[in-house]
Length: 182
View 1 (cartoon, rainbow, N blue to C red):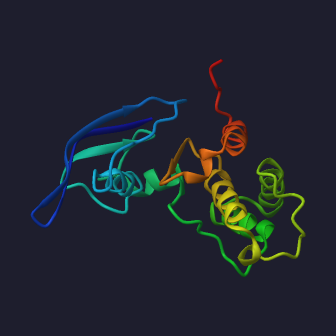
View 2 (view 1 turned 135 degrees about the vertical axis):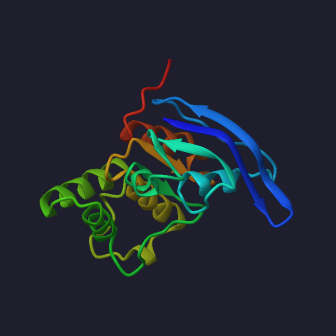
């Protein structure tokens, strides 16, 4: 589902990625671990088409970041290091807006937003509470819900600290249809 082949990225005279090869099969969860400056965020930026590699290529859901960046973007859901929610909208309004941006019809978008609010344990939040008034954990869950609202084949999480807790990790994996091995 994700394939990096000889990916190189330089920032001036500094090499951030030196011929990275990586294969992530469909249906798996892959984490990139390493110290600050190891290139983790650079890999995420290449996979999300925010950076083009200087050499090599990356395929995401069979699409090249170099030759089909639009196709890559249609195939991914992304949750960045910081929650990207509109603080002046409610949780429902945020998710419905993201769904509509993905091209979902109004009714489908509203139904999917309600489903994810339930799945991410945000259904009991008062309907008039703006996302800017949510706790940090609630905003993070809302952001994660937005990353999967269109059921993308690939979900990329940059610094997924929210998944540290077993309760949230299990909830997230369940609502993304991951099959966990016993």
